[in-house]
Length: 391
Image (spheres, rainbow, N blue to C red):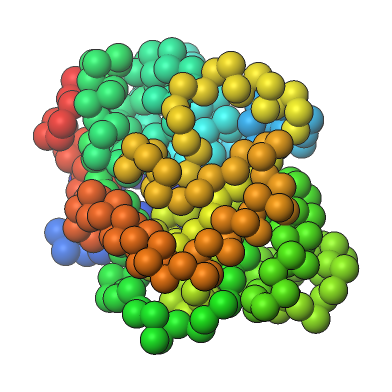
């Protein structure tokens, strides 16, 4: 049973949604057990507020792409960071849940652990990280710091617990499944006759930096596919305005905020950033071309550190290129248009990609990620150590 307040910190829209879902699941589990409802506070966004969490700082709109982006905004993040630390010290939560947002949250976990130690046992919060950073893709040594600072790591992918067991054996890790299956539990991939032929869904990303780098390429691509129709889904009005200003022929692209599920359900194919949205594309069985562009310096350093062949998670899970993937210099309008044309014109290719995506989603198991995550946290707080890896 969790008796005191609980702190939750999440960044970016995806983390904000995950945190809200987890808080709701924890409340559901507490009600089933007859426990008093928890008092949640922390940082996040609109979804967390709607879930009844006292959100002090809006981190959902503060996207960070790599350590250089974090360094660029050091002063603003530093102010939020230390304010949250002070708030934690004042309220002394029994449980701290850090959702994704690894560049910020891993530093917060280390600082919080250090502050708690200075109380000589008067305050010893359990620190949980929900969503593993991609340490298996780059800088695997970070697992040792996580082993030092975390009490529990909740993973979304089935291969992750074994990876940590070999490199950070004293870190408790629980595989809970992927929340995309909970968000669309009744989704049935529509057949060709039910989809809008030659309609392409554009998903440039949820961050300002992603839109700045991906959108010009996507916009140029639309000019090379004159027989296609385009719908671009953006997460907020600010990014929608930015996208509208970058279109040479605005009439060719329908821009809208929200409506991702509708677009994934009805469109023939998608062109998307390699981020978490590619898993939603896979869930809906929509053939997708993936791209990723970043700054020259970030790419040059990342190329030396990354040890996986792909960036899009469906490709990583399949260990082959299920989604055509174009990174940095290869992410040109010509390459995107060529890959899209193959999917638009070749029905056998389109059908084969959908079958590949179905197999990828099948590896994730059953829905219920948020409930399993809540159960793992309750086990931790009760002193139970069940799970693939435990202290």
